[in-house]
Image (cartoon, rainbow, N blue to C red):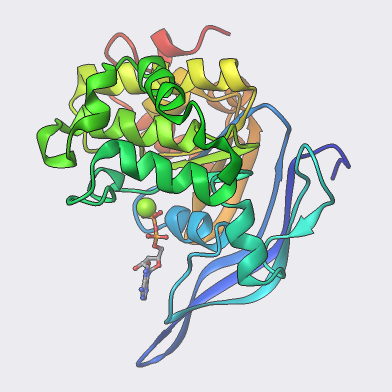
Length: 276
Ligand SMILES: Nc1ncnc2c1ncn2[C@@H]1O[C@H](COP(=O)(O)OP(=O)(O)O)[C@@H](O)[C@H]1O
Ligand SMILES: [Mg+2]
């Protein structure tokens, strides 16, 4: 652990209650997130990636339950907090402003009956009520940064394509310049060309705002393209963490090796994506 790490997860156990008793889906997870990095969380479907994200965001719902552990978050400004221990009001004040979350399947998370502009306003004004003046220009600027016309502000979500909705959500995640963005499978529902655009956008946003990113993806190709370090999950445990080049070149864990070997070897994958 480093006192300058932005997030330190220790001994995290999460279980879901099932008719046949509690099922552990996160087992003694330790994770160190360095300030300013893009940390990839890899692992097959069902390995616990989304459970980890929703637990950190305090969005874990019953029958899920944190059995033990801590998640020490050290925001850029303000005292450190244990995300798993603070009250709901405190967590609400951190969300969007300090930690923003792009949920898996987030394209469906925009409210269909509210114009894009008003969804931005709600997020921004909840945290920064003094920001009312010049707000529309701010929103237009955010849309522009993700390559969308300011006219999108007046539209409803159903008028946008999947890729456009994903851009809107990314812009919303950056609206308050958070310390950390947690993006859960941000490209999975998109076709390949749009995937690349979305990943590049994410990289640009990190560069612009200096945010730390936790990028969750089952797709090792995505990690190869974008992340600095990678944590590999298998059956609720972190089995390997390291510099992404190092891990791809010389995986220590057999499960990691099998994930890497399962990447199709066309251009743009392991060989093309990692320039060691
Ligand atoms: N609401 C739930 N009730 C019971 N089990 C769940 C629930 N949500 C997820 N799980 C289980 O937790 C495990 C991890 O799921 P998840 O975190 O969604 O994995 P991933 O995001 O890596 O695909 C899976 O075995 C899944 O079946
Ligand atoms: Mg998931």
